[in-house]
Length: 305
Image (cartoon, rainbow, N blue to C red; front, side):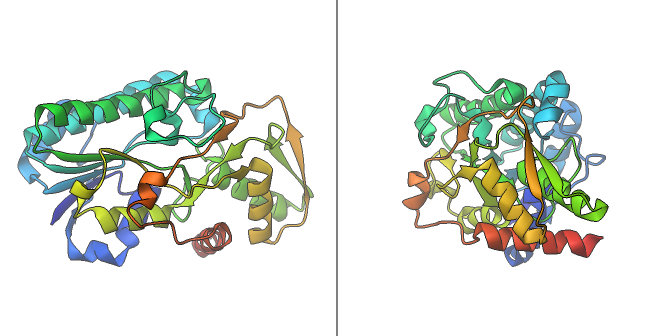
């Protein structure tokens, strides 16, 4: 199968390509210079020319809380353009099989229990990443609208929790929680410091999944999209506090210092846990424990230094 992976250089794309099942396909991984998804004409021309059998759409402007706060207009405009241009061009080029990657930030902010797919659009979004979430919601709704007009389209949106693993972003502004924790602890260890700062009181709860497990799900089901609902959470189904994740990262790095909290810093949603009952009905669950995933991530990081 000829498969276009947008954002192939990112964390999820890199894990997809590292999986041996990628060798069974002709994979297209154009750079931004080759395929600028923010340029509608260029995007349409590229897809008209290449005509892939399937698209795995991962590309987007991404970043942590601070990056989203610093540039909300760019996060909204760029991601809106990317989703609109790619999906419009894919439909015109006759691409009937497509996986669109959503985000758990699409869900309402004030929700104590596990978030099911039916909870989408039922409440206000988290303000710190609202722009990114709105663009993701727009792309999801566009897939549904296009499928309503063209029943021949097998387009599916997967909504993962927070992800981590090899090929994550480890820059101070762009990194998400787990990468930020690893980066802060690495820096403290290198500089001989005994304390690391955590934003907020550390009690906010998050769900993290190893990016390689999401890649496994995609490869397992890419050939049977008809068996998937149009919108599906793919996650672990368990969460932990920010403090717990920092402690796990410290263990993986062998660091024995202490944490202090800056409660003036933004923390985002207080809880973000996915209901994975739909995934469970498919007899799939992620195989990588948090400790295993962190060990693999740290090993990858050390191999690059």
